[in-house]
Image 1 (tube, rainbow, N blue to C red):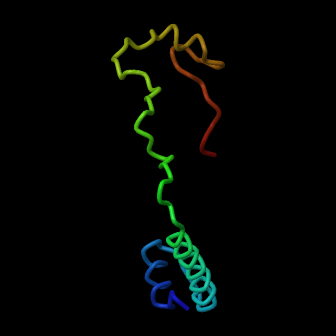
Image 2: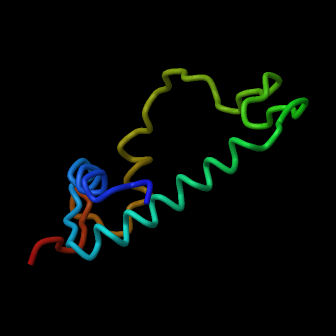
Length: 95
């Protein structure tokens, strides 16, 4: 087994996850299988394969961050389903 119980305990501590003794064996073998799959991927010959995740010809479709005037109080209150005077009325959140 590539990942031992101490490594699982350490990862569980970092992730703030409580593990039992039974979990240690189970998680250790699962983590080992995951790492074995990464070893298999490292063996794949990717010579001549174009990268697809970080293409240099991508354009940002986000709008510019330009300051704009806020809507007026009347415009905001026009969309409120329940209001009381100048306040928005909502359902009770706490008992």
